[in-house]
Length: 252
Length: 355
Ligand SMILES: Nc1ncnc2c1ncn2[C@@H]1O[C@H](COP(=O)(O)OP(=O)(O)OP(=O)(O)O)[C@@H](O)[C@H]1O
Ligand SMILES: [Mg+2]
Image 1 (cartoon, rainbow over the protein chains, first blue to last red):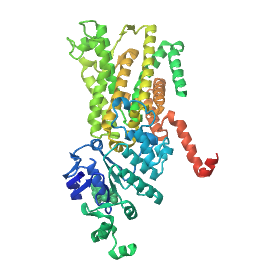
Image 2: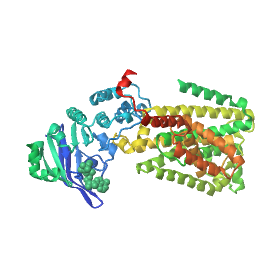
Image 3: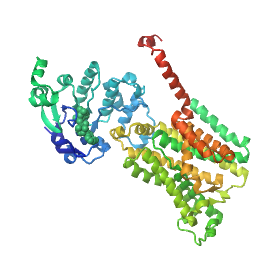
Image 4: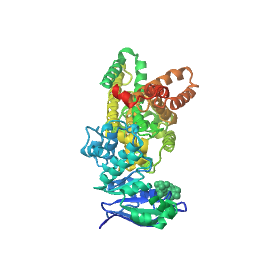
């Protein structure tokens, strides 16, 4: 199968500290992949490199045949890669619709940009529907709850019509029901996008993940199904931070 | 609707002002209106775009000098030198001055000069992600450098004395009260048009984008926009407005000196907007008028203490009323709401449903 994203020989160094070391990583088109690893494993850094926020010391990131390293952030977005941040950032003064409209807008020509928004475009309407915030469409985004903000962010990604979505811990800090809804949202988004999700929560993974990649101290530890990864002793040691017995007890 | 009525009312008041005011007062008002045009640009760049522009005097000056040079050449007559040049021993008209004899060229330069400088500066600076206080200091340094340049080129710019003695403005006799009234009306019209254009910009998608960049520039990058371009556009637009205002200021006041556009003058332009309220266009305009009126009154009586009063005003506004006079009502509302909340529990969903 063709690789949509291919990361080769990636090294990222922050003033002497090796955040990522010799990383090779690939995503197939259409995949929903989960990326896990303990704090400081380099998950966010990997996303930062792909999206042009951090420059690697060496290595390449090729996306649909184009090299992304060296491009500016907005150019990466225009190439078809969207991302969210660990802490959600929506524009609180703008309404929910306006947030989506803004996110849908970078393809607009100048005359359309200089006009006011009239009505709601089809893209925005369908995104509102997908994220289930239709009832709050005209409220300022500042009034949204934490969970709703994350959904708005995912909506803002979808309206950009990217091919690849990178989501950094989208369910952190969410309640159980919110997680459930987010998981369903992710699955529906993954139907027509390639999605990479960084997540810590094991329950969430078991419920929604198929393929999982584990990072540890900037290196690729292993890759496989949830069951395979959970059974891997190295993962149990570094990621779960628990001994084998404890884990067996939990499973039992 | 309410906005339209307010706009019409203020337009009528301004247009009727010549009936009430003496020519002297009308001149003062015309001068304040020029500052109000600059204020609109500052409200866009600073209020919406978050760019603390401490050097608007530069653009005001570029527009003003473009106009002033043209007026001086018209007055001197073809082939003659402007008065100050003969005083400082210049014998031939400098190359830089020659094209300004053409009125169309001069009018175009009133806008093109400031806009070009702002575009170049903006692209350079915003691409490098210079912002906040760094940008403020940089723009202020630009104003300081501009003054040094003007003062140093005595033969070219009139030095510290600047350009003075204007008699004619596109056929208007600047010593005639009726003609000055026409000039006043022209300024009112330019202010009105500028207001409408800036308001349209602020309400457009572009305006929302600008606010989004002010509140989260890094996030906007990941929406696929280049914030440097978006900010540069607003900055250049504000520079163009300042240039037009400077060009109108010259015939109204009858002179243009480096002191009219230096660091202090630039700061005053900003303080007016801060007092009126940078987030509101009407607030910025009102603030500019009010501030410069207060300056006239106050600095006549106590010229020495004005500087301190001005500084204190600025600090007070930034500390206690960051939204300025125009934002006071909203600020009070928030305050009352914040006081009430702990006392009376928020209405429950049930209560809301019943209401
Ligand atoms: N800009 C930076 N400068 C210096 N060190 C950094 C920088 N960004 C990240 N690091 C370091 O690189 C390592 C990897 O960080 P990263 O944020 O990628 O981890 P993560 O896997 O996302 O962790 P978490 O689960 O806590 O979000 C950490 O040790 C972090 O301290
Ligand atoms: Mg992280």
